[in-house]
Image 1 (spheres, rainbow, N blue to C red):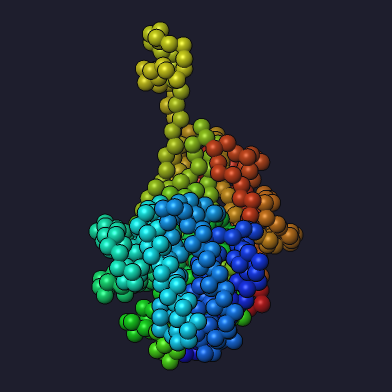
Image 2 (image 1 turned 45 degrees about the vertical axis):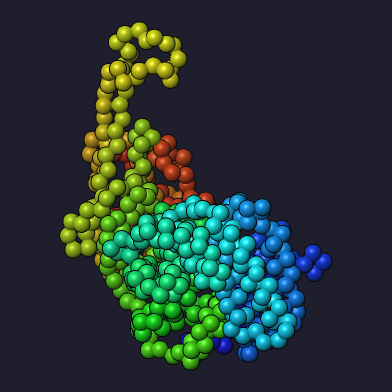
Length: 544
């Protein structure tokens, strides 16, 4: 966007400055954050530096030192490839095709192809073009690990194919694309990960561009529309529905901003003249600038498509309030207050007020199998939902006949009679309102079982109960016997009602998930049968 462009240039300059700080002039390589050089550390800067070098508005415009460093980086990249042209990503993956990085190299080459004029510039352009051949061989010799890798593989292979015309690239891309796009009717990819949805979106944008087939943009549109409803009151992303946890997506205190979606929202708003996507791109840009003082480092977009410099679209703000329910997630937001219900997770209820987050868990000490992990959500009325789960315990008697072995694992235990089969069933009904959440927890089956209701809050925070105020830090917990509890963070307040505390068997309860080390926890405790009504109330800011 025209208004974004000056700060996009600044973002690129900051990225180049960071690369220059990590460049070792003696070894002629860039070291990563963990103290060793890596293929990625030296591939990505070629896109970044070529963008700054050829941008007339950058302080690095035609800075010959960048030409020298990029030449050094190509030397390293040759040396870092294995005999079969695969590479190592030293923080995790080995003998992998350079699919996660070849896009940066191709974009760097395309910038050079578009703007190179001098003898030195043309020489570097041609050297990088020659290096794309071993990169392509590495891609052809690699494979995938996760579902999203297929689309990153296809996009990388197609970009390379359109530059070096190696048939194996086209074949491997077509083979993956032949598997079909793994997106559901709601716009969720297989991994349900906002962190990786963006990678799928970026990949399908590339695939559409390289094949000239707009079919692949439909999944991008669907996911970008869904992601509008995964933005929390503090402009972070809700990530707890993810099937992946490798980026701490299961941690209530982990914060993920939608920065990586800037490219796809801007690109699709430009193609579709979509004011809602343009508004989201603008929000993401403003969030980045507010936190960093500059724009995102995607200057390559503006160099490869100079029309973006003058693109100033109409913008529409995403919905401030909404209520969506699909498959195993409910998302409801009203201005600065959001509620999420989830299946497949012990953290089945999330509430957020501003930047104050809370998740709720329920467990009973019943044969170490009574952590409530709902498998489905039942809609029982307007904004009312129910979870049900049954846990079972049983004992076994002696084998009716002498076994053929004394080795326990080799015995046929299916022949043992079942004795004293018992069950514990939870029913949790949740009503969503503008004023908060009403939660009714009931149990049937086994009685006299100690249970806990667990409220985990973003820490540090402040807790107030009966005129007493407590400063609460990560990893700490408390219980209360009476009165409502106010939890406050940065002027955002949530209130939980109906405190009760009949025992202190909570943080180490057998069969429960470990206590959160990153949040502050409040426990309600008692014994089955449970019949409790608890509210989590949305309170006005103290300074409102």
